[in-house]
Amino acid sequence: MVKKNNWIYKVFLLTFFLSIMFSTITNLIAYNTNQLVIFIILVLVIATGIIFDMIGASSFTSKEATFHAMASRKIKGAKETVNLIRNNVKISSFCNDVVGDICGIVSGGLGAVLAGSLSESTSLSITVTSIIIAAFISAFTVGGKAIFKGVAINNSDKIIFMIGRIKCFLKLK
Image 1 (cartoon, helix red, strand yellow):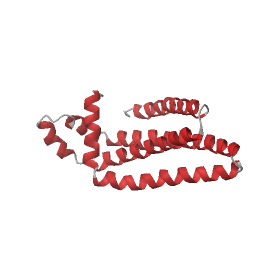
Image 2 (image 1 turned 90 degrees about the vertical axis):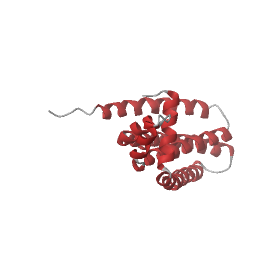
Image 3 (image 1 turned 135 degrees about the vertical axis):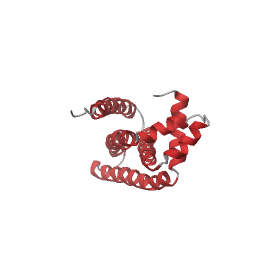
Image 4 (image 1 turned 90 degrees about the horizontal axis):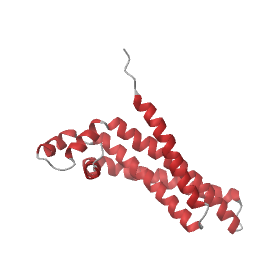
């Protein structure tokens, strides 16, 4: 008998509803504010994607044995960290694919809003502003992920333990 993989359905639904939520919130803010606020939101969305990419990468390179020793000494967050590492495929999928892709799509939408706003308030055409904003988003997203992927690999145990401690503190499953 083939085991059903409900994770795929959960990821689909989670992505769908998170995307609606993030897009709605950012669009409501972006369409009712000035260019500086839109730019700040855009930077925060890009940073969120980079941070979650780093968490996803660190979940694959962390060593479970380290945290078993800590869990036996009842160190808060160690048990949660072991659980994170054991579920590294799901953690990576959520962090890299779900959150990362949503951030990429939302940043593109915010970039379009910002490009339109800049085009209206300057003598630059929408084509020029769109190209400049798209290049900015791409460069900072790809560059940030490249830099922080190295950080994730070199500090994977520290990063995943921090997430385990947060999970413990928030009492998440």
